[in-house]
Amino acid sequence: MPRPRKFHESDVVSSAGEVFAVHGLAAATLDDLVRATGLGKQSLYNAFGGKRELFLRALSEDRDEATRAVTEALGHDDASPLEQIRGHMLRMAIDFSSTDRRVSLTTRALVESTGAEDPLSTVTKAGIEQLAGVYAQCLDHARENGDLPAGVNVQSLAVYFVAVTRGMELLGRAGVGRGVLTAVALDALRVLDGQRTEAADDVR
Amino acid sequence: MPRPRKFHESDVVSSAGEVFAVHGLAAATLDDLVRATGLGKQSLYNAFGGKRELFLRALSEDRDEATRAVTEALGHDDASPLEQIRGHMLRMAIDFSSTDRRVSLTTRALVESTGAEDPLSTVTKAGIEQLAGVYAQCLDHARENGDLPAGVNVQSLAVYFVAVTRGMELLGRAGVGRGVLTAVALDALRVLDGQRTEAADDVR
DNA sequence: CAAGTTTTTGACTGTATGGTCAATAACGTA
DNA sequence: TACGTTATTGACCATACAGTCAAAAACTTG
Image (cartoon, rainbow over all chains, first blue to last red; front, side):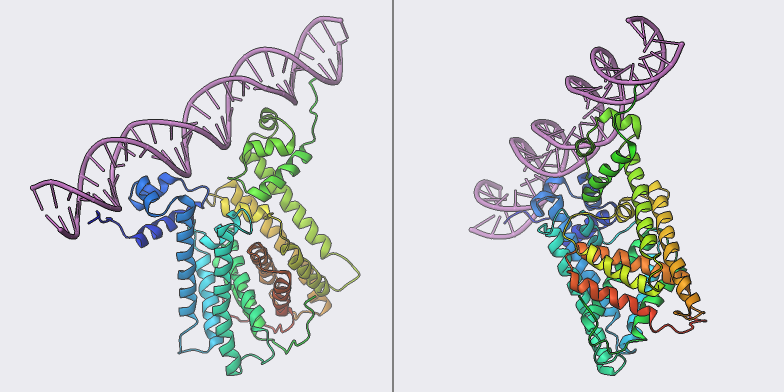
């Protein structure tokens, strides 16, 4: 019997995500959000609780979407795992050299979080681990295929790809062009070529 | 005959840089800056012009300091260029896994800039190129030493190292620990091992 | 020591912003 | 069609903040 909402939460979260991706958490004003989502302040508060909470929702969605996208990119059966990673990295190079003002919510959260206990940090860290997991899985397949030596440290390599990706995002934002970014991606991929067993490398 | 200032601009810029590194441009309040620098609002305005301008000054100083540090790290004569890069990357891994809340002003500027024409962007881009230049110089030496094949693309490799470094910074901020970050650095360095001539790689 | 110049000080201002309140509208059900 | 419940609306509030003003202080030089 209650009056039904006239919006879908997921739509609101997604519009809000747009705003946050362009302005960031601190710089996005409540009015920006009201304008972008189409609903009133009070409705926003009823449904989500506040700016931060809304950001958190958008962040989670963004993280899931990113994981989904990478999973999909690395999950095709028509190419070898290594070829998929290669394609994916080249794709990222192009994406990140776009000229729009978007910055992934993960990066924003990382930079705008106020401390390690800040929910922003914990959600973000989880997202990074999730993402690394996807890379790791793909690299595992490659190893099973014999495209990577058995002794390779899949875990750190996975995190390495996450790091390179974040770095490319930042560089793209700085105005580094598609060509250079692509070259960087190719450089990054070269770690997959010259792999030796690396059993006892010093990780002091 | 004018009354002399009782502060040194460089001190003020450096204290302000601290504040910005912890809070960011938007989130740092003028009062934070007043407290950290020790001088009054009006004095800040007389000397610098405003929060943004002060940030810009701090950003430039940060950039120069970063370039200087890397130049110094890669400029010793007691080790081969490649060994120096290696040492430098491992050092970065440790630095970035610190638990303080600092974020390089370059990264902050990248994320908080409002557009490509924003001075924040231009200064930052210049800084990245400066930094890449330092890496390039070191890689050049390595090539001359024969530690790197002659056909190697020193330029993109230099940018690659900047990207990896930025990525590591973000990951460290996300709470990734020293061990993992070190492993990532070692992975990143592996591009220097397996280098082949790479003359005609597709940079579509 | 007086004049001139610039810095410092601290009170002040206007605005933008996150968040709240209370009244009203809309819906499902009985 | 009336009731209960929740959503919506728009006005409202407190505050925090970037930036300003004008008076007083401090220094140098003539």
